[in-house]
Length: 155
Image (tube, rainbow, N blue to C red; front, side, top):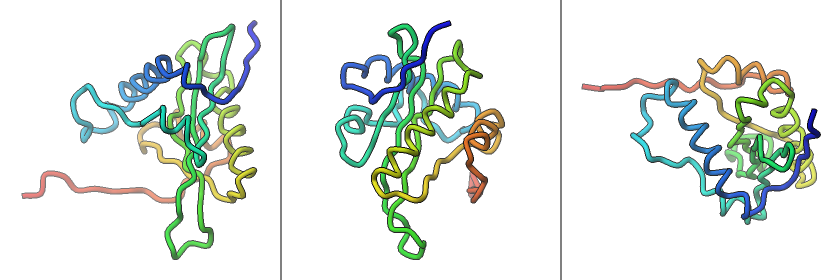
């Protein structure tokens, strides 16, 4: 069994990270009919890697990237009891490596980074019907907070 290494992402990782991004988009398409047709992109991964207010982490197995995630410090709404929070995104685990605790490993690494930046609140968004992701995030300590609702085809 291979050893997993968690580390900060590098610009040299961009090709693989962009493949991960397309994997996320393909997985989420059934949950979101509002997505434009391909090709689309969610993230500017290069800017996130270079940013002082974000941390992109990856997990390696036998020299290959198998999982990713990022935390980005965002300003909180002025009426909340914290000034900033970390927003988590780009949470991806290669299908061959799911169920091995890599998502939790990434969340814990990003949690540690957030604490090192003085952050006391972490948030993320997940599709309501994505039960597997919700379960994984609950295992990592997240609790449901707000449900966003919408009306479509107003006529």
